[in-house]
Structure formats: C-alpha cells, structure tokens
Image (cartoon, rainbow, N blue to C red; front, side, top):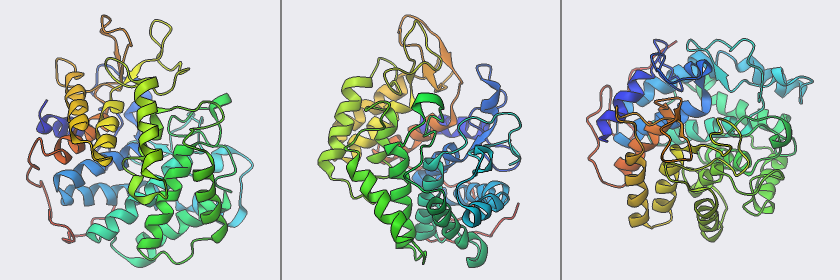
Length: 372
C-alpha cells in the first residue's frame, strides 16, 4: 500500500467544512455515527500532513478545528472555568461533532474525555512552536490558556473520564493515557509561553503519571492506548525510557493479534467469535513506538504488518475479526489508521514525502489565515 493511497483515503474523509470524518460518508462498512468528527481523530489526521510536509493542508485542518469546533464551543470551556465541575456530563466540552461542527444530537455517552483535551493542547502548542500556526494572540493562542484552566477546574486527574475508547460503566476510570495526554499538553503549553499553568494541576498530573506505574486504569492494566505514552507523547513526558519500553513489550505480549492489536483483553465492542477484534491502528502505534525507542528494524516489521492488513481495495478498516479465516472487518476505511500509515511510512524513510498540496511546506512558513 503506497502512501499516496492512504492520503487519498484521508481526502475521502474530508468534509466541506474542512473537518475530517472518522470514516468517509460513502463507506459501505460503517456504523453511521462514524460519519461524524472526533477531536482526537482529527489531531492524528493532521499529524499525517505534518509528516509529509504538507503544512498548507495542516493549516487548513487546524483552522477548521479551531473555527468549527474549539472556538465555536469555547463557551463550554468558559462555563467550566467559572463554575468548576459540572452536574451533568453534557456540560463538558464534547469530544465529537457533526461534519459541520454542530453537536451530535442524542449521542451522549463518554462525554468527559480528558485525553482529547490534553491532545488538542499538545498538538496546537506543537504546531505553533514549529510552524507559527496561530493567526492571533487574543483568540487562537488564548484558547490554549483556556484548555489549561479547563483541565484544572474539572479537577484533572482526580475525576474519572471515559478515555480514548470513550466507554462508560466499569471502564470509566482515571486513565493513564488521559493523564499522559494532559501532562504532555502542559509541557508543550509551558514551552510556547502559556503564562498560567496552575501548580496544583501540574503537580497532580505528573504525580499521577508516575504513580500509576505504567498501568492504564483500575479496570485493566494493559491497553492499546498506552502506546501513546511512547509515541506521539513520549518526548514530552517525564517518563523513563525503561518504563516506555516495558509498556510496549507488555502491549505486544498481551494484545498483539494476527491483523491488529486488541484494545484490551476484555473488550466486547464488535466482538467476533466471543473474542475482541484486532485494531489496525495498533500496528501503526507499535511501529512508531519501536521507532521512538530506537529500534528501526522492529518498526519496519510492524510497518509491513500494517500494510498487509489492508482490504483488497486498499482500505485500512478500524478492526478485523480475530480469526484470520473470517474476513469480517468494521468501519472502513478508518481515517486515523490511514494517518498512522502515512506517519509510519514517511518517518521510517520507506517513502519520500509527497509534494505539499497547498501553502508552504517548510517549517515556520506562513500561509494565509482562513476563517470558518
């Protein structure tokens, strides 16, 4: 599977608003909700444009995320900053939206996702530092300060969230992957000059990160989401490389399957044959994690594994049935999986970066600001 094919699949996910759906609207294998937009998925999609040097398309995506979602719904941040913890989960900043940036009606599960807030803080700070992505100080840059205050006022990391897999019930807990995203976001915010990083928030977030001992939550220890502590967040976390390596080896040992990585051992979402499905993105995360740990040969091996699990039409689905003899897959193509393929393939030097489609492709290059 060539990098250009993954970029084509990502383009299929692009909405007229400039936002990116989780799965293209024209997919034949899709849970209808996946036609919507997730903050988390969008960040990983935009990291693919950074990887190939298409900073023009990166800017377009960032401005859509800002104008259609984060600035549009910033009053949710303002209310929490003023009022603190909400009475109802619907009063948190929502993690998913309709293709035009409107709220998703009636889909009200897992609305507290601290990882999505931390990841947005981290990514926007990263792109400001590298490319001067913000258009102004009073709105774009100040949004990062609001995200910091928001995390503080919702008492992160002492209140359970729904985590990367946005689940409720027993899996709603304090998640290490969410704590790590917030910790990395605070590191990046400090680096670019966000002025008010509450001492309580910084102390408690880093304290939780270290105290959890590489375990995802009280519900289960090992989770695919833990790989985010190695890539993309590893360089911005006060987490020893030895701990990062132990996490990767444990995920590999306990969750790796034939066509992907199980999210966690007791996962029942899209279970097939009474066993959890295998998520293709996990192979991309393993490749990037081993690359971050200085093991390029193992990274390349996982890159090849990732390419091998595409469908005959060149799509990377969200997940496959655990049984390699059962060609059952779900939600295809998943934009997030194709973004990881682009990042892996470019980062490992297996393909040269493709020419930028718009704007400047050099670090620090300025592009014309685009509004909503």
